[in-house]
Image (cartoon, rainbow, N blue to C red):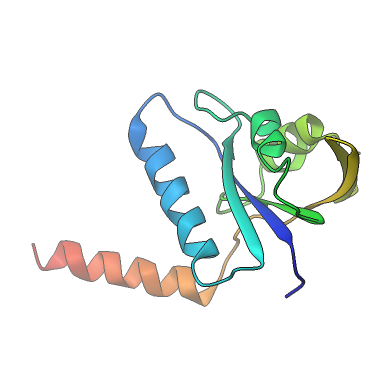
Length: 133
């Protein structure tokens, strides 16, 4: 992986605290053990930091590129329209630049998590847990 990467883990946001706690825990796991990444969180609705505040939080960190990672399972209106619009990413594209302090930083927008065997394995684990209760 490249050096000096910022990762902005994006959550939906909720009036309940659990959403923010889970997104923050995932962000922490992403950053664990990789000294080349600065990992932050931001939320589309109802929570802070907002997407703009999340981007601004990278000021002064020395990052050279930001990857915005939607912590969503599947593509939907939020991941295909709302979030890209707020981040200033044009329709049909997955990158732009953002101004942080005196620097122009490349912002790349990743796909949602999607269908993956890791998610299926986790689902099987959750099924097993509830069956043992």
